[in-house]
Image (cartoon, rainbow, N blue to C red; front, side, top):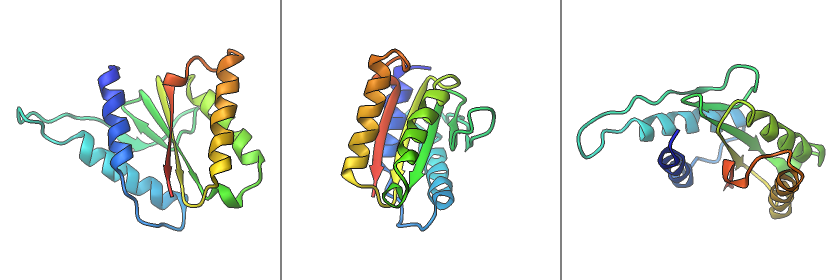
Length: 144
């Protein structure tokens, strides 16, 4: 997969403006619909792309699969979850990187700033210790 597609998907997720849903599956469905629409738009040359964006399947159990190359993990309302959810998320990212070239984490609903920082620092620790390959393979988005 090209770095250009990685940047395209980053920009699309950055531009996604979800409604204030009350569940992770609603955010998931909305983001899948938005990604399909944006990734498969006709370009200036009037050529259409056929990117496959679907609910994640397979051994990694990622929330959204993009062309079997990018995995998207959504987390809803981390503010109301125990601290163990942050450790679980870091482990999920590590596992997703076994199957996907890139992993995007999308935090939806209520998430405290300190939780986001804890997620980032935990991933950086895993990179320094060699558990994760590179920070360039993981991107975190906040949608709250």
